[in-house]
Image 1 (cartoon, rainbow, N blue to C red):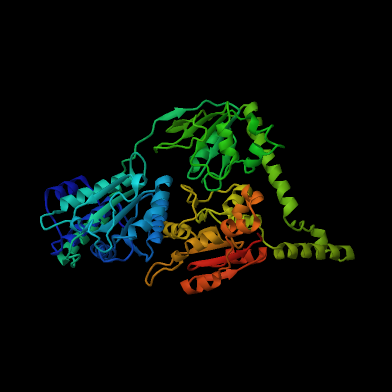
Image 2: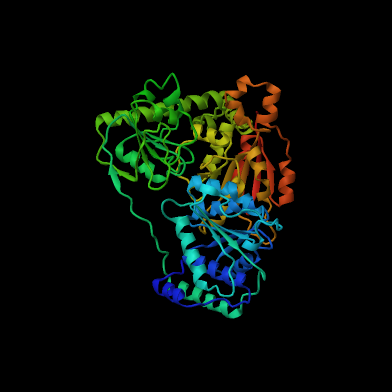
Length: 601
């Protein structure tokens, strides 16, 4: 895929001259100028949902795919299209463009727009609309699309229908403006361009215009120009080292949080979706050490400063710690109109540094106590709930011919078989998936009980992890993961998606990829406990009438995921033991597959 196609000289030339496609349809000419300029800005993925009013944009997108300028993805369901584009933005850091027709179509983008807004993911929406003379008169497929997404977009623009007098300069300026606002200050996020279009709604792009852009592509590839970056270097705040400090890493924190905790010799409380869950200072059992009556007085109560990276969402203990009187909170957040501030006393800084000299004896004791206590809690939990693996045989036992040696061998084999045949629990499921994933893979968690179980039990490991934690909704998890897979660099590994049955059903339409669409290497791991068991963990489960609770909270289901997978052309396997899960996770994956794991309520 070619790099960004921009230079100061080319930009100046385009601003001064009209280089329209000249198709005879102002809609097609404007669509071509707009999309080609977005390609020059850096856009590499277009996601289209079919429709009549948007045909000029969709057909221009198809021509750009034919020229090799973009990857085009077609989705029947606009909600799926929106989350596919979101996943592309998550993986690449560059906005994908979503193209829809008018009427109710743009409304289906709203969940993805909200997640992109709160998750700070770049996203560009091009929604076709009726021209102004057809608005407000009950014309078919016409509603109030301008301003549809309210404050959830970084910028919204309602563009008049282009006419014969419209030149490329308007489209070029619009493309640059939209791309810059989606990727830049005050924070990355969604941008909405609502484009009115009049008939004739499309015409073929003339061969001369196609050839001109193809030549430009070839020249840019030959020049090898890198993409420009307008990112600003944030001001750095120096943080003094002292015991009593912990570093909290929430969703999107990344490896900077781990490096900072290690430099300051502080415990690292990193959520599983943080991208920081590794390193010598990692504290897996953070919830217990902060909130358990047995441990909190000795650990959580001793904290007087919290330094936060990312967006923590997976526990109640972290917000409670930050809101506690006497705890200083520093939030590291280089962008954003909002920052994580549950106690409304947090101080925001844009970047941090600290003295990374050797640890004092007091600092070693501080971080060492947290790490060792966490390990002892996890070891105790595993030994009490898991089937113990067989102890390794001594070499003499394996070779000896005495009866007691044969008895030891039989016991060893029996123990191994018990472990392989043991039924799966949420804990063993999460540990198996985590162990099977490698740094070149991508791991995506849905908003279900399983992500919290993973956060509770999995050890440190430096692997890319994503979860839609901007709003922590169950929307679009499958589509987001597919988007991540589509945008992953060549040579990347498998994209594994861990989600509950309700989260899977909520996005089941995203399983249906059209003919000719790329079928990425995605492995969907569905923990099927027959409904929303996450609600069983809430206080309401203890007070609500059982029948009413099951009907409106647990919402039981009996979906046939094997049949759904078959109809969508996905592979499917159902496993119920650790041995079966291990075999499924390590099997060769050439296309999209589902691993269904039945779990007890």
